[in-house]
Length: 92
Image: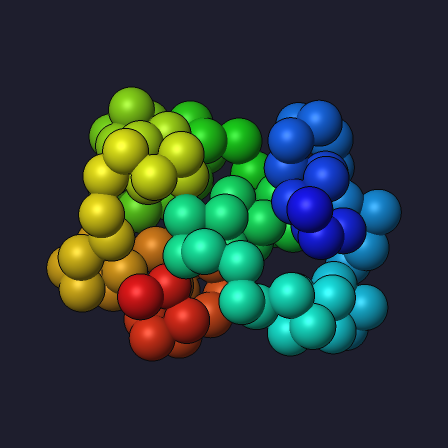
C-alpha cells in the first residue's frame, strides 16, 4: 500500500495540497484510475456529492467510479477532468 492509498483507505483528507500534492500524485500515479479520481477529489476538498453536482454526474456513479465498480469512459473523463484539474488522459 502506497502513501496515497493509506489515506484513501482511512477516508482522511490528504495532508498535502498544491504543488506538494501534485508531486505526491506524480510519484504515485501508477495507482489505478479509480483511486486517482478519489485522490484528486480529496485534493480539491470536495465530497462525492459536490463533485457530482459540479460535473452533472450522479453521486452513486462517482462512488462506483472511485471503487472500481464502474469503468471510466472518455465521456465521463471529459466531465471530471476540468473539475478535478487534470487532463482526460490522466483519468483513463
